[in-house]
Amino acid sequence: MNLKKNFLIITAVFLLVLSMPVMAQEQNAQETKTEKVKEAVTEQTPEVAAYVNGEEISMQELEQFAGVRNILMQLLQSNQEFASVILQTEAGKNVVDEFRKLKLEQLITNELLVQEAKDRGIEVSDQEMNNIFDQQVNALKQQNNLNDEQLEKAIQQQGFESMQQYKDMFFENNMNGFLVNKLREEVVSDVSVSDDEAKEYYDNNKQKYETSEQKKVSHILFDEKEKAEEVLAKINNGADFAEMAKEYSTGPTAENGGDLGFITANEQGLDKTFRDAAMKLSVGEVSSEPVKTQFGYHLIKVTDSREAGTRDFEEVKSQIKSQLRSQKQNQAFQDFVEGLREDAEIDVKL
Image (cartoon, rainbow, N blue to C red; front, side):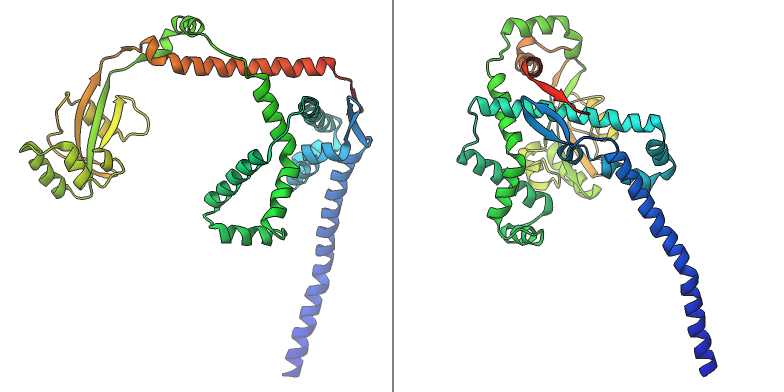
């Protein structure tokens, strides 16, 4: 018995000794990976990435924003061969440098916008901050299915002593973004689109507003075919379709009488069998038998129709003006940013 026990102990020790070189190799490999990343991130890089109107953007700030170190570490973990090309070749290093420069340009633009917002005296009021934070809290609760007490506990588990401390950190990290948003609103506030501009766009793009034949459809959804046939008989005997939908339908449109609105023959998001059956009906007609789909059994009624054609300008005017306004606002803000860059003193150190 003792001999067996001693043998097991010796075997365990022997296996441990054998495994130690492997473990050491793995540790050394990981350390080598980390060193390669450090070299790629820090090699010949200055402490300051750029000066913007005298304000410093540090390399630390740039690296944190660009996340180069994390990206390279993930590459090493997922595809060491590809990562080696990035880390050990001139071309790979150039890719890293170009990416870093791209992120620096974004930081420079953001710094210019923050400076401009502060120069204009733009501030986020206490009421605005409260509204923003309430939206943040509500989003967190909804996304994670938490009540107030559970959310506060979760925040404390993340190292915050209180909700107020989390709120302070939230605004400390995001205030510049809120200032830039308010600046943008101010810059584009005068942008408008006239009816004539919208009409000109409509006349030049009428093909965008061509429509297929449309049918306005209501339905009643059942789990069982027998129940659908029973209700269909009531409808054929004069029962109101919408009232039957409110009483019997198991679908989400039951409350509004089963109304699905207008659909087309190629309507996305609708079961093809349902869609084909609906498009065959005339206005006022009800399907002669329940229509089976993956959702159950449907009784379908068409309550209105629109012929194929081109939508009237008045029908789409608001949509066009909104679209054109958004485009003009984007262009106005882009022009504004370019103006800031032209007038700024920017000294890039990379």
